[in-house]
Every structure is written in C-alpha cells, then in structure tokens.
Length: 287
Length: 126
Length: 136
Image (cartoon, rainbow over all chains, first blue to last red; front, side, top):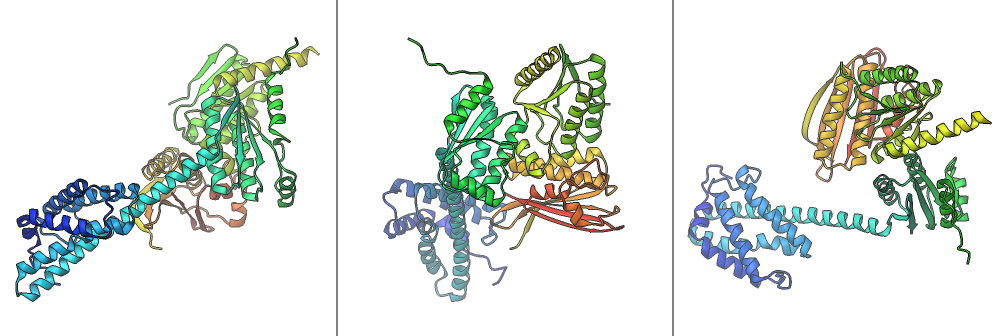
C-alpha cells in the first residue's frame, strides 16, 4: 500500500455526514441482528450520530490506520462505553459488533460514487475503509468480552458472599455456616470475609460450622487451618464444628493434623463452649 | 534520630507503630522497650500494629523477641490490632510468633493483661 | 505466551531505607493493578524478605521491577541481584526455618509460597539472582 496516498475518506465524512448517518441508521434498522427489545430507535440514532461526528473529527488528522494515536482516543472511549452498556444489557458480541460493521455499506457506496471509474483509487480507499472499520469493530468485540468477564466475576463474588454469610450469634460470637462443596478459591474468599468481620465487629469467637459440607480435600482443610491460625494472630479464637465422621477419617488419611484447633461436634456445643469461655451462663427461668 | 514513642498508661506501656519501620528503627524499639519495662517496673506492654500493612520475618521476630525479653523481666506483651491481610501473610510465610499474646484492639488487650495480672496474683496467694 | 513489559524501574538496594522504599514502590504498583489487599500484602512482604537478603547477605545490589501484561492478565515481576558470596546449598536455603546467619531471615520457602513464580540461581563467590512474579 502506498503511504503517501491521500484518502478521500476524511473529506467524504465531512461532506456527507448527514446522508451517511441516515443511510447507516437505515442499514442498522434493516439488519436482522437489531434488538428492538433492547434498543430504541432514538437511542440508536443518538449513538450513531455521536460516533459519526467523533469519527469525522479523528479522521481530519489524515491518520486512518494507526488507532493507537491520541486522536483516536475519543472514538475508542465512546465505543468502549457502547460495548460496556450493551454487554450489561444482554446483547450478543455479533449484535454489538454489527454497530460498526453495518457502517461499511453506506461508506462503500459513497466511495464508489466518489472514485467513479478510477478503480485503483477505489481499491485503495476500500482497503483503508475496511481496515479501519474492522479494527474498530474488533475493538468493540474485545471491550465487550472483557466487560462481560468483569460482570461474570462480579456476579461470582456476589454469589459467594450471598451463599456464605457471616452471622452474629451473640455479642462477640460470630458463626460461619458453610454449606455445599468447598473449593479452594471459595474457601479463600469466605475465610478472608470472616477475618474482616472479626475485625469490624470486635468478635473474639468465630465458629466455622461445616455440617453442610460433604467432603473436604487437603487444600480446603489447609485453608481452614490457616484461617484458624490467622484469627489467633489477630486475637480471636476459631472453633470448628460439625466435622462429620467421613471428613474426620479423610483428614486423618490425608495427614491433616488439627493440632490444637478447638473442634466441637455441633454448632450448639461450639456456642456453649464460647459462652463458657466468656463467662456467660444460660439459665431456665424458674416459675 | 527518629524514634517510636512509648507511652506510659498506669501500670502499662503502650506503643503504637504508625510508620513503615526500617530495620534499625525496629531494633531501637526493641532496646528502648526492654529498658523502659525494667525502669518503670511495668506490669504489661501493649503494641498496637493496626496501622502496619506489612509484618515480614524481621518485624515479626522483633515482636516475638520483645515478648520473650519482657517475659524474662516478669511482664507480658500483647500485640493488638493485626490486620487480616497481615495475619494471612504471616501464616503463609510460616512465621511462628510463639511468645506473643494477641488481642483484637487496645481495650481487649488491656483486659487480657489485667486478667493475667489477676491470675498471677491469685497464684502467688495460694 | 508473550509477556509485554508495560513499565519498568530499577531500585538500588544498599541500605535499610532502600528496603522500605522497595516496599513502598511495590505497594503502589500493586494498587495501580488493583490487586486485592491480601495479594498486595503477600507480594510486598515477599519483596521485603528478598530485599533484606540482598542488602544483608548479598552486600547490596538491586531489584528490577517490571509490570507485565500477557494480554489475558497483568502482573508484577521482580528480579533481585547481588554480587555477594552466593548460596552454596540451594535446597537447604529453600527449607523452612533455615537461615545462614541463624538469627535473622527465614528460609526462602516461605517467601516462595507468597508468590506465583519463584526462580533462584546462585553461584558461590559470584552472587545470587532471585526472580519472582505475582499475577492478578
């Protein structure tokens, strides 16, 4: 490709901005991928209009192929915003990328008219236009995917926190009832959450109840024990309750030693142990 | 030379570590504190590390040494306010702090020291 | 996988103050990469341990800091280098609780657990080089 070739695209964008906008909007409205349920035609018009004027401004510099240059920053920022909002609204990646790709047709038509019978010039122009729009389209797809990943990560974290709440049983006594299979990353999040709550509430006792946990592997057992050690360094006592016979057997087979960790058969036993340590007695009212 | 201040509170000494200590400063604190404990005949030492965002093996060992040295002088040391992230890291690092007592905050640390003082008086009475 | 180096910085390690400075700079980098508080603390603690080794045992040296981007994730790599006496028995140095001076420092095993990647090379009389990395 000839570097000195001066593309007509910048001038074209300026000259036919309104026409291009109308043709592009029509192309988008006709596209089968249009999500009328998610996007109103007013919104579509607004974002198309804004994109075109940003594209025109960036193109005036004459640089149409190096999108890392500062003049393309506003365009990319805008597209990133569009991709992110579409990702969170539930668009698919192709529906999102179509926003850019559908601009090809109106632009190509104009280029054809502009170049007339000069087929060499037309080839150059089409090459530049395709490259530019493909790059912008890929950029939207990339931002779309990374925003989707962020959303998924956020949801996973929220679900983890929902599924394992740290509850206050008594002033100074926390309980963490664990239910379901524990994997290493879930255990880690849950344990960090527990330690943070210990600090925030100033609780000296924390009961980790694993009655609802079917199996414990070595890694999870180690996380549990590390949490107990960390809590002790902070000045709190952890009590592990509800270790089922099978889990006790597995632990011994795996060579996981509970050492001086306080363990109790049930949550009730653990609570009464904490009461005793705190000097609290529970009495039935005599009538 | 900069120094970590040691505050006398009744029978106790309170140290609040607010800065990221370099190693010489940590060593100086260890010396100052043992000298003060002996001089004041303190009944307990509280070291508040809630502002410390890193406790590496050097600082950890310094804290443990202080506890061992003050114990030799008949005084217990309580380290209070260790942040969860710091505690998790110390456990992962494999650092054992055998000599120190810990508490969640200064109030609880003080209560712990008072309880220990009472216990040792009771023992002596028997 | 290609590791793109986004940023780099060299920190001289000659004194106590340099160890504090290394901790501070690495803390800032972990914050800019949005590491979780626990991950920040683990890396900064590992840096403190290795920087002290470089100053105390290596007779001074430097740490090269690099921010990495392999297009999927971002991370921080550090290379500690000194021209000190080196380590004769690497296996022993990696054992928990081992310390060549007996009193200060901990075996490198603990430091290794704080990071995702750990590489140690040393030649007696020539010096030591430790490379660590932690990914977000």
